[in-house]
Amino acid sequence: MALDHSRSTEVFGHARTVIPGGVNSPVRAFSNVGIDPVFYDRAQGAQVWDIDGNAYLDFICSWGPMIFGHGDPEILDAVRCQLDRGVSFGAPCEAEVRLADLICSVAPGVEEVRMVSSGTEATMTAIRLARGCTGRDKIIKFQGNYHGHSDSLLVSAGSGVATLGIPDTPGVTAATASDTMVATYNNLDSVRSLFEAAPDQVACVIVEPVSGNMGVVAPQEGFLRGLRDLCDQFGALLIMDEVITGFRVALGGAQQLFGVSADLCTYGKIIGGGFPVGCVAGRERFMSNLAPAGSVYQAGTLSGNPVAMEAGLAQIRKLAREADRLYPQLQRKSDVLFGGLRDAASQAGVQVQVNALGSVGTVFFTPDPVVDWQTAARSDRDAFAVYFRAMLDQGLLIAPSQFEAVFLSDAHTDQHLQAFLAAARTAFAQVANR
Ligand code: PMP
Image 1 (cartoon, rainbow, N blue to C red):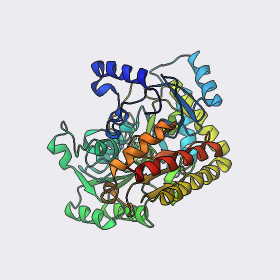
Image 2: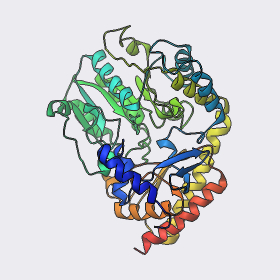
Image 3: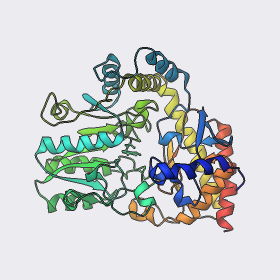
Image 4: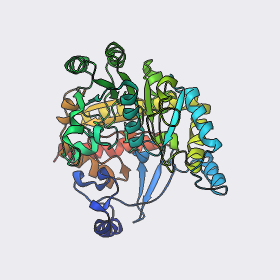
């Protein structure tokens, strides 16, 4: 290994004695790429530094939230200002109303917003709400889509679960799992069959409108519209999980980009400006069933936390203000990076599929098009591990899994993209020569 990671290795050794597996979220363990994880010390702009003093270009971006890069001055100012006025109230504050207003004004079809503290809580609440509104028990999700780790959604859940080779998890009861029906992404017939197998029993379909958790897989023409139509036909709610896509693929997320509105949607990551925030949002006629307006219970001590709300407000305000510049620029960077990766792999004689949509993309080490979990799972994970380690050695941080996305931010410059491509050429050569 080119870089010295001795301090990270030492801290990880100790971490394993006090934290299960040494990490607080499984994919951070780097176990599937055959090395110990790197412990971060600090981050600024497009860079992070580890505790050994190594510098990296960061293409994880905290798994999505840092769309302006690290240490954006507007967000930091908003946070600092709130710190002096109180860090937690457990009571209503104006910032949460302003953030809800802002989300309603830019996200199509969103009339009300309930703040929570993570994407997991957001999707869990959306599912409960859909069940409460319809009086039905079953839900349909897609193989390879991840919606957080609540029990009914931890079935065929892609990324972290797939990476570790755990198909489902102990601790989820058979009864809970049996209410979750699993369809094939980009395959409307599979959804229709499930609806027909359980007439009048399906509360909702939940989907990542652009899959990020089996690696990036875009919806094929007509897929999202078809889901909308099937939900309407069978009296179920459509939930779009925009935890990754929200405010990223467009200001109004995937619903704006593809012109299909959900009944409920979930956001996370970007809306917290780097703080722990999620929300469930949607039409008033469904949202008004949440307590205390309605009878579907949901609550949170830290929900609408003032510091997190100020950070989110600052980030979303800046996104709204700079949307005309930012989103086309991210698309141009995406074309340069992901187009360049296609060329680099082909020059090295490595067969890959590069899927990209806006500022997210994945290099799959497989010769065949990736359109769903089956085709994603054919990827050569050993080749990915070689590629990942070679990138890390050259100071390039990407997610340590074949089934995750590369995230682009406003802080990435052309020079950073060229550095990524130069490192990738070396990494692909190592894959070819292994
Ligand atoms: N939904 C999607 C689409 C996600 O990508 C994630 C997290 N990667 C979640 C939900 C869960 O969010 P969190 O990790 O904040 O609980």
